[in-house]
Image: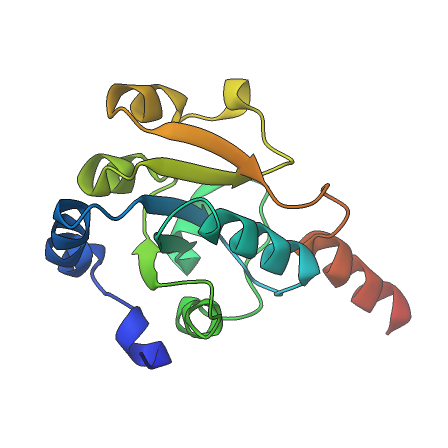
Length: 161
């Protein structure tokens, strides 16, 4: 599958495929994030998420959804570029846009078996926790300790140049 064939815009364009995968007994794993400056922490998170099931869907925040999060810097790379980079990774099966502030509407639509989050999150701080429980999914915290971040990379670049 080529990178461009992994990206579905709008996200709803992937719903029929996911329905078929679910009927075939595939375990659907869902993850999301900005993924502005791809680093080893992202790779470890995505690979660990993929190991949880048969299909990994990643929702990449659009530029507009990032702007909804107060205090968050605008991304360096556009949504289209970030989605393409994530889709190029072998562990990712599908990429969809996250246009809302939270992934709740996507979780309700796709009803994954598992939502994977990085180890820097806790269930209590996640607005989608109730949705996960309601749709009968489970939450998994995966990847390495949060010792890498795009924010840290940005700051290191500022300090060096």
